[in-house]
Structures are given as structure tokens and as C-alpha cells.
Length: 351
Image 1: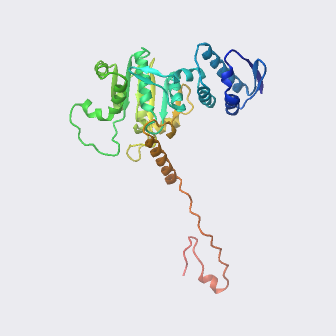
Image 2: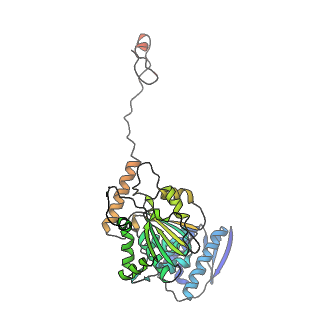
Image 3: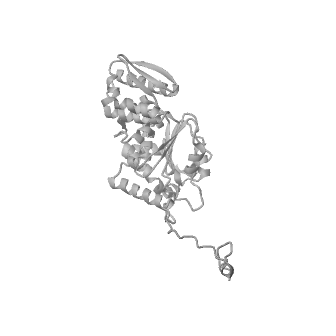
């Protein structure tokens, strides 16, 4: 155990929250004890936890000095995320949660997990966004990619998807190869058209600054200074996932999005997304962000639908055991009756 003191500076009072509720979040999440002194805050706990509280307060003070105004609700939300995840930087979390203009669209995270997602994409070169439909996984990743391109952090955007049909056979598709695969990639085009003028998107696609292609087209390439997104990753095989992740070149970032409950691979094929979760857990330099039905930002009905399916799947996978009626053991027979009632080891009568 160690004890440290943090001196108060102007504006730190708002950090405590109503009835010190924000300090209580830090105490319960990080396992520290605090004591308010006339001009400082005394923190006692494990050295790593004490340093974490010191860093969070220092980040808050620097933001206040720079003129950022945070409501009590904002501070509470940011602290909840930063205290739960030791990798999250409080300062980056606040800055990335601010509304930003991406092309012609103003975008801001609408939930704590979306805040985590933005912060992770700023901090890490590889991020996995995993969760149900409607949580903004793909849309926010495309927004981050467009922002990186317009601010010249990367030279191009590459958007990939497995060309897997969702439970139905489309049969022969006419046209060129690009026209054949376009139906699978349409959601990525939709996100781009929402942020940039259609004419600008078409020009960037023509110049290969924005490339939208099936996952199979990634093999053998080394992608430098690029922002790469793999969408619908649950429909990539384990081999395809490894192939995609090893395309990452110098100065590049990658985001992998998917919903583990909507796998359309043939029976017997393991999803590359599930494989990556198992294999890459704990690898430094990458981040996994998990979304829930609470993060759904589509029609309210979508959130209720997701919850209903989750409940149904839980009942299917883990059914409530049926309680059998208790039947007392019969008394041991004697004499000739014992031979007549003798049973085999498998419970069959031996007549």
C-alpha cells in the first residue's frame, strides 16, 4: 500500500461531482481510499491504482487549463470508462468524444462504448469492434478513416468485406467482377456517401485513394500508410483473418468489425473473428471493444429485437433443467422374488 497527495488547482472542485460521487467511482473501481485535506487530496491504495488516480486528475486539470468545460454528467461518464479500463487515457477519451466534422457530417459518440471505440482507434493501430447490429461499429470506423484521410494522417482508405451471402443463394450475377461484388460492399458505400459528396467519393475511388474490395483481394499485399477496415469479420475464415491482419504495413491502422451472433459461414467452418478473439487476447498494441444492445443507435425497436434474440439464444444454449419427480428406491427383494426382479447393469429386466 502507498499514499500520495494531489494538490488542488483552480477548477478542480467540479471534478468531485455532487456529494463526491465522482471520487466514489474512483474508489470503488480502483480500490483506493481518499481523504480530502484543505488544499489537496490524499490517496491510499496499491501503487498502480494510486498512480492511475493521479494521472486521471492531472489529465482533468490540463483540460480545464486549456478551456474545456465538462459538465458533472460528462465527468462521471468519462471516469466510469477510464476507471474500468486501465488502457484508456482520460485526456484522449474526452477529446475523442467531442463532436467532430467528418466531411459534411458532424459525428459524436452516443454511448460509453462508442467513446471507448473512438479512444481505442486513436490510441491503437489495430482495433476490434464487436457487437450487435446498429451499434455504429462500421459507421464510426469509416468516419475515423475519412477523418484520417482528410487530415493527411494516411494516404488511402481500404474497405474490405467477405463476399458471403446472408443465408440465401443469389446465383449468377451479371456484369464485370466489380459489379458482381458491389452488392456485398454496398453498406460501406452508404457510409462514405453519408460523409462525402457522391462526386468526391467517385473521384477518390477512381484514383484508388479509396478502395472497396472483397477480402479475398487482400492476399499478397502489403498496405502502407493506409486506414484499413474489415467489415462483417464474423464471415471471414480463420485463414482469411490471419491473412488480413498480416497485411498491415508501416504507418497503417486497421479496424475489424463484426457480430459474432450473425455468422453465415458454411457449417463446420470456424469464424475468423472468434478465432482472433481467442488467439490475440492480451497481445499488446491492439484493443477489443465490445458493444451491447444498450449501444444500438438505430430505431428503438432494433434494441428490443436484439435483446429478444439474446434472451432466446440464452434459453436455447442453457435451457432450464427439468426437475424430475422424486421416486423412492424400492425395497430390496428377498428369496425367489430377488431372481425374478434382477436387472442388467443397463437397467433392462432379465427374464
